[in-house]
Structure formats: C-alpha cells, structure tokens
Length: 459
Image (cartoon, rainbow, N blue to C red; front, side, top):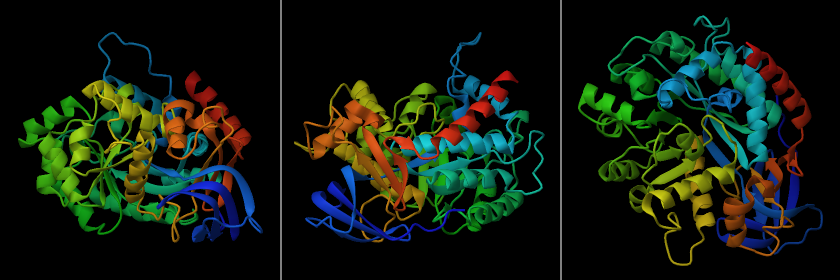
C-alpha cells in the first residue's frame, strides 16, 4: 500500500503550464495534489529539479499481461497471419499465466511506462479466472495483482474490469480460449465490486468498466451492466478490424460505431478504443458526443488493423488519447509519433495534427493526448494545475537533441527525434519514481520479470 506523498515544493527552470511555457516555476504539492503554482519564482526552500517539466501523459489503454508476449509472435504461420491468428497465439500464452506471473509482468510493464513518459494507466483488465475458467476463491484475485503492480511501481491507476460474455455478435457461446475472461452480468457486477475493494490500497486509484467489444456482449447484457454503473469511465474496443465491421453489419445491419451511437448512451464517459474503421459521418457523430477515441498506433500497426482516419475526426473537434495496448514497445513519444506518421503516410501530407500555421506538431499532439487521456482516466490528471495530481515528466535539456532548442521545439525534439531517451526524471503524485531515466525499483522488478519469462517461454 502506498502512503500519501509528503508535502514538498519542486522548482523547475522551465515548465509547460496550461497558459503555456513558463520560467522559474515552483510547484507546491500536498498529499499528491498540486496546491499552488508560481512562475518567475525563487527556488529558495524548494527542491531544484534540472530539466523541462511536462504534465505526465496518461496511457488510456493497456493489457499489461501482453507485455510478456512481445517478440514472441513474429514468426509467420502456414496461412497469412492477421489479428485473428495473433489472437489464437495470445490465448495459448495466457493459458499458463498464474497470478504471480501477471503481477510480475504488470510491474515490469508499468515500470517501463513510467520510464517512457506515461504517469498513469487505464488497465483494460480481462484476465479474471484460473486456467480452467473457474473463478478464484477471491473473485478479484487478478485485479488485486494489477493493483499490487501499480502500487509497487507508483503508476497512477484506473482499473477497468472487462465484461466479456460471448464469443461473437448475437450472443454466440464463449470459446475455449476465452474461458478465463467470461462472466454473466451478475458475476461481472460482483467482480466489479471486488475489484473496487482491490484497488482500495492504491493511492488515488479509480474504477471503471470495459465492455470488451460488441462481439463479446449483447445489447441486453450490456444494458444490465450500464444500469448498475451510473458513474465512471466506460471503455470499449470498437471497429478495430475489417472483419469485425463486416460481422457487425451482418448481425445488425449497422457498423459497430453506428450501432453504439444509435443504441447506447455514448457521452463523455465513453472511450472508444481503436475505432480504426469509421466513416466521416461516424467520426462527426462520435465527436459530437464528447467521447474520446483511444488510439494505440504501435499496436494497431503491429496487428495490421489499418490506419485511423485522423483528419475527419480532428476537424470535427474530436478528442483522442493514446495507449500502449499490447505493450510491444512502451513509449509515450513513440505512440504520438506513430500516430502523426501514419496520417502522413495515409494522406501524403506533413504536420497532420497541427491545426494552424506556425503551430508545433509535437505540442499539438502532446496537449490533445493529455486532454483526451485525462478524460479517459476519470481521475484529476493531465495538466500542471492546482487541484490536479502532481504527475510530472522531466526532459533532460542536456540531451543532444534538446540542448540547442527551447519552448515548443523541446516537444518536437522529444516526440520526433530523441524519444524516451530524453526523459530524466518522473514524479507521480509528487513522489519521484524515475531518476536519471531509470525506475527506482528497476533491478528487483526486472529480476522477477526475467524469472517469470524464463519459465513461461520453456512451457
């Protein structure tokens, strides 16, 4: 269990505030929350932190256990590989995972996230039961392991127990590979309450729900769960794959995004993960609801999902954030860069996310992902402002790619050139968790992860 961070004052020579870049900034923190910010301030009595202070970026979509699969699915099978063949490999991998394995893998992934510029994570958690599909004695055993990993590493947590009821559109029975996920609405709601208890010892953690996808629930079972959960974040995978879209049309006569907009109370609580395949009209419809699109560009590229149609959604005023999903490579600036570069490839343009002449693309990406990510977390994060968590990423201005620039150019260099190597220190709730680019508990976390993977890969 983490105790509340002690009161402190942090001094930064440069920081990105809601009003823009500021110099000689003192951030006062009590119980993990920013209680005062002053610029053009004296450093007397404050802890002096070298470098440029940024608000920590939220990671709005992670399946932590999949970090253990990274690099293990890159051999071609006898048929043409796709998301669906990858999914079968994933089912086989998770067959062997114990609660200890999940905790070890999650801790490693979360430490990497902190080192890579993410200060909070929305864990889309669907591995609930034992290898036979039976609930553990503690229904939220696996949720407790996620909570333990978050507490050990210090990352901010929004836990999203996933509601997974069926294997396909229209209520097809769950398959053997999904036995560790599946719950009916009644058991899921019990799991949700147990999960709420499980995160009780994690400082400032939040709870949400994650209906896995339209193919894994029915409107009736989802409606039952939604009625029992009137507040908090709602995350759902949607329109990730072409086959998913065509199967949804065959079942309902509508695409997944259209079905959600027409049949579900989509609003600012909702986060639509991937939404790779949307029409311009659907993009405008999602933007009008205030919902966030959760983009995971590195995973979407890895799985061959396709390219999210950014310009129509952005032009409609849509909100987005980024996540790491399968955790094949954990890097906050890398996800932003992949999103921008995918738009450049798709539309054969440059600086796709920047909205006006003279605007920095790095800053446009970062600030929009901050806002969308914070909304998706359901927590008070996403900015260096009074009343929000003191989640801070510090860039090393001595890094060769940052040394000769300033202001928005720092963000451009961080996003498009130096990447996570530019990160020196990271604070979560005012507590330092990364120093000189390394998580303070890295050695023990890596050793446990190494032992876990050596056993799993031999199975």
